[in-house]
Length: 263
Image: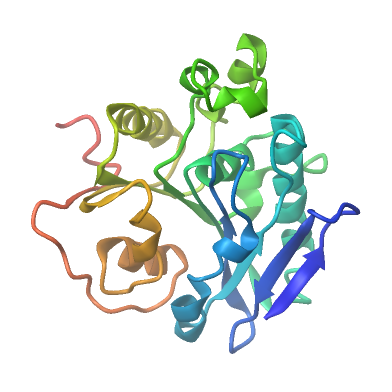
């Protein structure tokens, strides 16, 4: 592991990189959750334990936390970290055409914000350099967050909540998406999951909608690197890596973008 690689000038602007065992490897870039105010990259490196042996590289992004940093600043930090990895892909032994973003909860929000247009150098769009994304139990509409205690350290007003809600600003083109949540989530997380799938489907070549009945908001990430799970098998497909057949749990729901709107 290469720890605390700086992508910016601030102490919080660093990432951990786990190189693959061979050249031209796919890369999973993971953005941790914690409602933008807790946890760190050290808490989110565990998927590397099984993804690296399959042939992938793995990076865990660190970023500043609220209330010390505003959400606009946090979004900017994650975007700069992603761009640093894109620019340094060759030096890191990474296949620049197989970079997949991933995130859980607030991390899924930040990963999706990195797929929006308008922040990369002129002439470059995220859809052109990011091969796909894995979004787990994400927060894509911040207006409900603004109305809860979670907003106390964030300080979002109605304008900021709208501007920083990626579901309201989706580009006309998105890379393939794996959108997953646990079956034991709140109704609000289920709503946001469903509405993102519906909004992203006409914009993406493939949207994989996955509900894992036996997982909840906090333990869904444990399947991320498990090739025997539906989520882990889907992740390997996103990374274009071989994997074993998944072990379905009774009741798990899996739909492709072709099925959206038919149920």
